[in-house]
Structures are given as C-alpha cells and as structure tokens.
Length: 170
Image 1 (cartoon, helix red, strand yellow):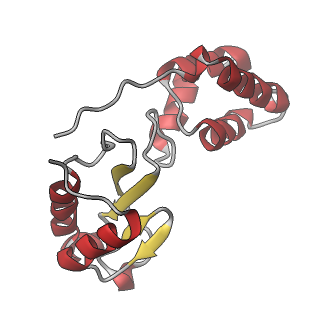
Image 2: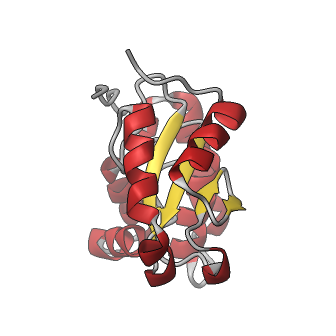
C-alpha cells in the first residue's frame, strides 16, 4: 500500500494564506458567511485543514464547532488534498446491490490504495459517496465529476487505464 504524503498546511504558505485572508475579508460581513467562505476556500485551495478551520472560525468570530460541523457534515468538503483525479463510488442502495463493492475492490487492486486515500504520486483519490441520483445506471462511478454507469469490474479497469493512464503499483 502506498504511503500518504504529509499534508501541507496552506496557512504556512504566504500565497495561499493571502487567498484565505482575501476570501474571509470579502465575505465576512454577509449573512451565512461561513458556508460561502468554506465553499470558496475549498474551491481555491482544494481542502480545509483543521488549522484552517480554527483560523476561519477566529476570523469570523464564530465557534470552531460551527466551522467543523459544516466541514464534517457536507461530503464535498475535504480536510486533505485530493489527487489530480477523483474517483467516487456511489454506495446508494441501487449501486451497492448492483456491484459497487466489486468495483471498489477492483480499484483497490489497480491503484494499491483504500477509499479515502490518494496515490503516492498525487494522481488519484478514491472516495465513497452516497447516492448520486443515477440509480437507473447502477452501479455508478463518478470520475472527475463525470458519471459512468452500469460498470462491471473489467469495464472499470479499462476505463481507468484509458482515461487516467494509471498502472498498478509495483
């Protein structure tokens, strides 16, 4: 299994800290600023570390529990960097029954990582998600925000090899 790279805190990078401060300053005075700030920073930075969450809470003068509650509740927020490519496995009922566990096993075999991890080269992150609303296409895998339905393990293997040019780790 590949080793997870050390997470760099954007607050320690002057360019990223400037982005964080700019976003907070831009939205701090509007109602519902917490969600807007977190959404914008997720988009611009890519993830929301625990130190970032504390920093945001302090700057917005709200409890850290409120910021952490939002980040932990919504699945589109992440506290760690994602890979260049994100593969999400729908595990809603139809997809689960339709074969999602076999697709997850195939991905683990191909990439040498578990769901929630990123390959050592930073290319691919595997994630499990709830229903993506494409039940008639079950099982569904979302690769870089594109739905791929009615997948079987062999078809999934070819999809990965063709689109992401990923080879099984040595």
